Length: 190
Image (cartoon, rainbow, N blue to C red; front, side):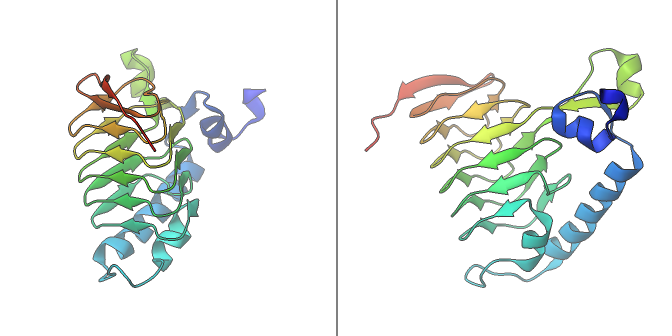
């Protein structure tokens, strides 16, 4: 079945794909051009939805604000709920779908990676990779400098401490910190 799929379809399905495929390269170049325009703009809070980001992102709901500079690989795989905020310096490798729930906030220099490379150096050098989706719940706060690794889910109302490296799922209603990130406190919500 995967023989008849495009590299983009393989990427979306979480299968091994060739990251330098011409279609994927064209998609990344489109994103780079839009990001260049966004990062050079004088767009301010209160100006309403940013038209460049609306064109770039898969979903950008009302009240989303993204500080400059901002980077993503494709944009089309990034789906942001209402009132999502990204502070300056976010770097997002959205090779797979990334869903962010309403009212979630990200500190400066947060990195979100869906792409993963083979441990075998020969396969890795051949430009093969896989991508695994990330889901971030509603009302999540991710502290500055945090890294979110491929395939993880963060539950609603959770706080991830600054500088954490999230390598596995984190449940709802907790504070989690560290490298690797682990739960240190249950939150009483509501």
